[in-house]
Image 1 (cartoon, rainbow, N blue to C red):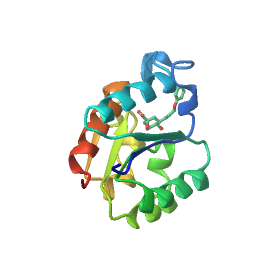
Image 2 (spheres, protein in one colour):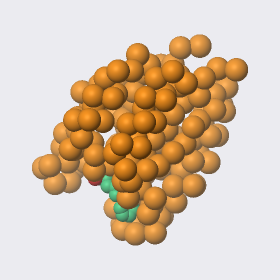
Image 3 (cartoon, protein in one colour):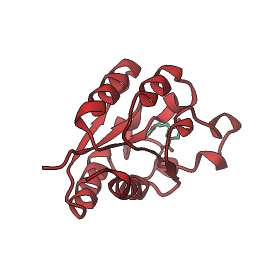
Image 4 (spheres, rainbow, N blue to C red):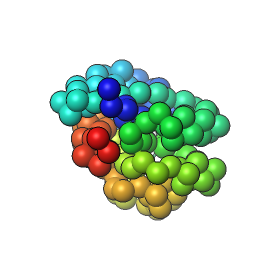
Length: 146
Ligand code: CA2
């Protein structure tokens, strides 16, 4: 069995579909998980799909992916703009990292225009709501080693 794609979501994304639907859409994170599982299955992969509001927890999962994962898809949410610690964890990986965002941060406030994660990501998918995750999983499957 090939290793799974780790799909990690950062703070407040547990509220997806519940608050601010005009920005983040009406799909819940559980809906997004189902989309990711289906897209990965099309490539013979499974996903480990997790969300945390805690920086250290996300870092622990990145470290877990270092040995257990084939690639990481990460929506770091607010931590993308602030967390050097998360960047440091991602830098330890030798597997591909794909950054993903529901909204298009480049079309929003200036402070959202760059993320630390982009320094290590193979690429970023943003602006397509839940489909950003699906596309990011597809990209990760394409980049992951057999
Ligand atoms: O567009 C994205 O996916 C973001 O990563 C979302 C982050 C934001 O800080 C980034 O700039 C772009 C915010 C996540 C907040 O999640 C919520 C979800 C539903 C309702 C309220 C917040």
